[in-house]
Structures are given as structure tokens and as C-alpha cells.
Length: 268
Length: 271
Image (cartoon, rainbow over all chains, first blue to last red; front, side, top):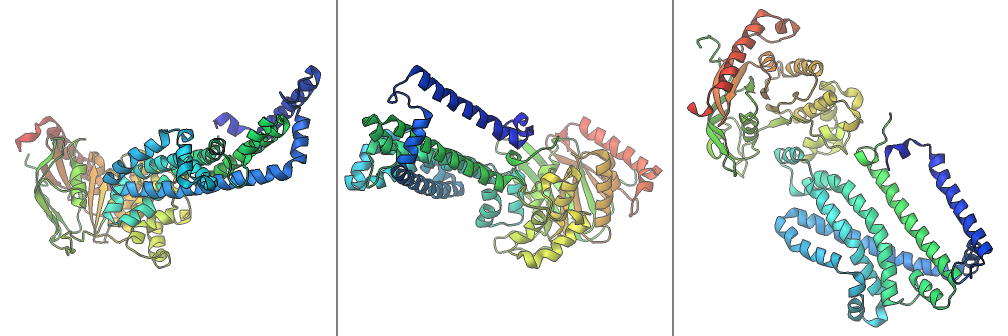
């Protein structure tokens, strides 16, 4: 966000995009009607809305299934990423032993390892495979950002802690972790979105488990040429993604606004 | 030079004894060589010299941040812990305020006590006392970002004082501040120091600052860093504006400046 946007009143900042959205949707509705576009190519917004209201029990269930995998993957990735980062901050040896494998895990496309994971956990535990795959996708930004943050401590502050005979634990608790917090939160913002992407991509590749998630709804709707419902599922995914992003941004602002550059408001 | 103030009277018992200290960095640079210096209890000693003469390096070695390559730094009056480290009882003030940006003024001043295992409630009195001493009583809950450069430096000084150190080590603490703030902090520092019996070791590259503050100046030269001369500043404390405009002050500044010029002109290795 640059300074120009920051200077605008909140009403304008929210109002303008909303008005634009409404205009685009209205134009979409009119064009579909005018050009008589078939509904299996591009359904009118009104049709999507209707599908949303009639199919909502099944869609909401799918939303819940996807959300659950996303959240679980995110929190596992968060715990694992922070733990490994803290561990590798303790010794250079641990760091150089862990990092290459984390990178390998990161650069290997999740789509490519999905069949393998599926076989390992057993075809009857698809939801476990989904969770593992989404976690792998979400894990790396947390690990790399937190590691960077733990290392980015001011050298004089490090000396100060040494002068006062701080223990390893005190240094971690009172110096390294707070210093890494802005980096961690940045990582969490990326990771939250990636967990959702991971959950969806994994479901596309590995199929759904006991219940169908939103990805499965999309595949199914495509097979049945029920394009309005497909759009409804897509809409839900976007809203979920936006919600996760806003949640992370809110958390970031809450924790950093009093001391970190990134969240400070400037008066001019 | 034959000025009578060249060798200064040593005020009290020796607190720190630096013997033949040299420091060579891993890159091969010889930062310090042949440093001998006795620091007496209760004195205000400045390390004055051009940049790159190793004065900060010497200060850090005295603080125990790093080991000398040869020679020793002894603390004859300190007890030694099980690891063989002297209980130095120092407070250190860096050139930058070096505050925790996520902590309030209170949190920052509380830090040394927290690291010593004290609880917030028990330490509150000492912390508030130190904050008040540096004149920041109204800013206990402020964050460093909300303070001016001079105020941040005051927080840093309060933090150094909160454990009631025997020695205060200051590494060009006021170098980044404007002239007016600097003079005020100089006065406040002298006031804090006066009659409390602690020792101050003060690194600076300002002749005027060192003369105003110190009872003794160790003049350093570069390549490699060495002590060229010890200059005693005999003017009595308390010192104030009157001292700053006195003929004495002028004379000390003139002598010190001349010595500093000599240090900068002379080749380092000839001592």
C-alpha cells in the first residue's frame, strides 16, 4: 500500500472498488442477456446467485471441508516452520542440514508427489493425503521467513544480551522471536493463501475423501456442465481466500502497529 | 611537549588493568597493539582519537565482547565466576540507542534486570528510578519510535544505569546527536556521575567533549591502534557553562588538539 492510498478516507477506499464491482457485474448481466451467451459458457450473475441460494447446503458443506483442511494445514505448517526455524537458529550445523531438504520439498510440484503420498497414506485416507500436501505447500514461507527474521537481529542488541549474560532461552524469547515476528507474519500471510491453494490443488489431483471439498464440486459441476454452480463454488473459494488474507492482515496490524515500520501510520 | 598535565594523577585504586593488549582480526588487520592502561576507580576517562584508531575495539574488549589476541585485561577488584569470567559490573551505551523497538521505555530499561532473573513487580522501583534519573518520567509507556534521538539515548543510559554498575562504558554515545542535545546530555551525564563513585570510560572523537567531561584523556593513534599520550584535565568538578567559556578549558582544548594533530600526522607503528 503506498502513501497515496493511505491518505484517502476509508469510505473512498472501500466505496470505489465496490462501485466498480457492481458496475462490472451489471455490465456482465446485460451483455450475457444481450448477446444471448449460452449459460454453459458464461452464466449471468443472477444465475450464479440463484445456484448459490439453491445449492447452498452442499456448497457450504464443501466449503467447510476445504476450510478445515486449509486451517489444519496452515497451523501444522506454522508450528513445524517456526519449530524448525528456531532449531536451525540454534546452530549453523542444524541449519545447513535442514535447509536443502526444505528447498527440495518446496520446489517439487505438489501435483507430482500427490500420487506417491496417496499411495503411502492408503487410498482409504484421501483426506490425510490432502492435509499432507496442503501442509507441504504452506510450510516453506513460514520456515524461510522465520529463519531470516531470527537472523536479522541487530548486532548491538545481540552484544547487549551477551553483556548481560543472557541465556540461550532468554535471547530467543526476548530478542530473536520478537525481532522475527514481522517476518513470521509476512510468511503467514503468504502461507495462509498457499494452504488454501494447496488444499484445492491436492483435491484436484488426489480426489476427495469422505466428503467433497470445493475443488471436487468444481470438477463435478464441470462434468455435468453445471457452470452456474461451478461459478458459485469459485466465488466461495475467492471469498474464503480474501477472508484468510484479511484475517492475516488484521493480525499483522494488531501485533505490529505500535512499533514496526510496516504497520505505522504517518501523519503528514 | 612538557606541559605539566601530561601525566594525570590516578584518583583511586586500580579498577581495570590493561596489560600489553593487542587485537588482530581474522582478516589479518592489527587493530590494537601494545596497549597499557590503568583505569582508576571513580575517574572519568576518555579514549580520544581519529576514526579507525581502535578506541571502540578497546572498549569492547574491556567489556568482554571479544578476546584480546595477546595481553590481558584484569579486574583486580572483581570476583571471578566459575567460568573464570570477572563480574565486571558494567553498563554499556552504544553509539546507537540500541533499544528493543517492540518494547516500551519501561521494558527497555527493565531488560538488564529481566535478564538477571528479576520479576517485573520486584524491579519496578529500580526501573522507574533510573527512568526518572535521566529525565523521562513522563514517557514510561512510550515506544522508542515515538521518542526523539536524544530521548532514545537517555533511555539507553537509563538502561545502562539500572543495575547500578561500577563502570559505565560509552561508545561515542552522543556522536549522532545535534550540538544542543549533545551539550545537555554532557551536562546531565556529569551530574549523574558526580559523587556516585562510578567510573566512566568514554569513547569520543571530539576534543571539546572529551575535555569538558574527562578527568583524564587517553589519546590514541592509528595503524595499529595505540595509546600515544595521557592527558590529565585538572579542572575541578562540578563543571558547567562557566567551565566551557573559561581560559582553562581553552588551554586544555588547545593542548589536546595539538596532541591529536600529532597523533594523526605520526605513523602509528613507531611506539
